[in-house]
Amino acid sequence: MIIVMDIKSPEENIAAVVDKLESSGLHAHLIKGVERIVIGAVGDRGSISSMGLEVMPGVISVVPIMKPFKLVSREAVDGNSVVKVGNVKVGGRSLALMAGPCAVETPEQMFAAAGAVKASGAGILRGGAFKPRTSPYSFQGLEEEGLRILSDAAKQYGLATVTEIIDLQSLETALKYVDMVQIGARNMQNFRLLQAVGRAGYPVLLKRGLSATMEEWLMAAEYIASEGNAGIILCERGIRTFETYTRNTLDLSAVPMVKSLSHLPVVVDPSHATGLRKLVGPMSLAAVAAGADGLIVEVHPEPQKALCDGHQSLSPEEFSKLAGDIKAVAAAVGRLV
Ligand code: PEP
Ligand code: MN
Image (tube, rainbow, N blue to C red; front, side, top):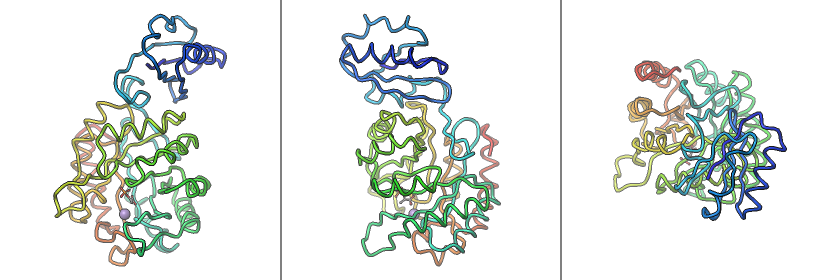
């Protein structure tokens, strides 16, 4: 069950609802959004109907939710959530462009990448400083030094930032430097990390796990939301299938499906989804046509020299052309870039 309350509700009205729920043996999860306060009540449904919550001051509605995910479900919030990352709004009518290299390598590389993606209309700069590589012998990232470079390059060009965190320590470090943290596919079901990100209250980009169903992905988002963090952006990045010509299989059906189930914004990562530079453009356009709220694209000033994922990274020129094509598709489906 979800209790929706007026955003202007005084603390005592919120506390009264929480007390009522908890004294009936339910757990109350409070989320203060931009437009509404939502209290998720989890527990035995039998006692709910007789509680009289509807008439308590500040309560707008009481919504029973049968799905396993509650706070992130569409029933919990009117319309689509908008998540603010720095000054960039993700969700709503505008389409968010996030771009940058797979990994932060040098200041020169990041400043060149930042300048290029900004010139093409991106609002958020990506750059990995903690790299969860499949091989322990591959480049693992510059860690805090990388975050410093990412943040400096973004500041220079007026961009917001996103970086992946892989554990509690990297989360703590990243919060000092970036506007949004990313939970990667490999950590989508690292429940302690999800809870910590939930408590941190920072915007989070939650990637779909390599073999996760949409429901498992939404339950991962629920872990974050249940700790009070409403700033969640879901990212479809391809799933593991029997196909070998592509790195993963981009599940574009997840975009409209998940958006029908959840109020959270959904973005697409065509780079990790395909693993092939030549497929990044067509899949980006298809994602926008399918209703994605944004894209996160790997762009490197010199892809052939990249320490990580160069084969799927666009050059600045390729990204600039793609950004123009994206604008045309976005306009056709009523979105603004
Ligand atoms: C990334 O975005 O750098 C990354 C490693 O992605 P994923 O977790 O989707 O593999
Ligand atoms: Mn990568």
